Length: 271
Ligand code: NAP
Image 1: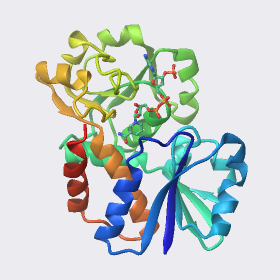
Image 2: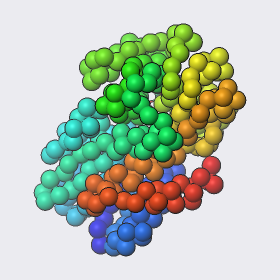
Image 3: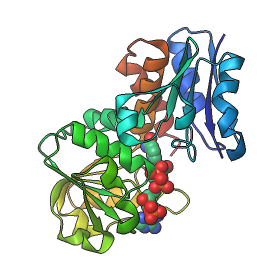
């Protein structure tokens, strides 16, 4: 049996087991995916231990997406550009890191029929997920990408990875008009569902709004965007898309998009 796991600090509410084990079933693979909480002090030994135990691949979540990278043998192009890894494939004696949040975001916007090329895009938040979004948006030739950060000085570190990025403080977002506004902060996520990272006067300056938060499926941010006539995109397919891409990397095969739709239909009623 092939073994896979999600490693992170707190994994209680993770949907990863359900998603990956569903894919194994659809692909008729003799494989199992489990949750593996790891203490920070054990990170330096995690990769070598999982190699010894015969694991085929792992996903990595908060807070280890960056701290795992020194223990890997190779890192893919997009993971290097982003500076973090959420997928590791064990092959031969090597551990190779990838970032499939990048592809998950791509799958989410593509599924919604939104193209990035030539678009003016504003991202709210400058954390780990925002970096994967920025890399995808730059690689897909957006006209401009701006990040709004509550601490622009701290967010300035992103310029090392993405020199052409514009970074603005939160109180400057009402001056921006564009094509796509994306929430990459946790604001509005369960249980704080009454929060929104931007209100009506800002959302109405954009033709489409996406939220990478998926619980609830329709956040207050998206509800308000809909009332302003914007096209809206929820974050659930980013989660599914990153898992599908991880399995494509693990199994070295392409996975039918219908499997992603089946998982979406199964999970959407939860939120
Ligand atoms: P993170 O690394 O902690 O970054 C969060 C960002 O939001 C930071 O820039 C933070 O600012 C900012 N922020 C937090 N609270 C804020 C507030 N009250 N006002 C203004 N800015 C605020 O987290 P992450 O990994 O990027 O994840 C962000 C969200 O995306 C989470 O809700 C996560 O669940 C979701 N997510 C979804 C998917 C998916 O597959 N759909 C994938 C990844 C993440 P500071 O830097 O100043 O703290």
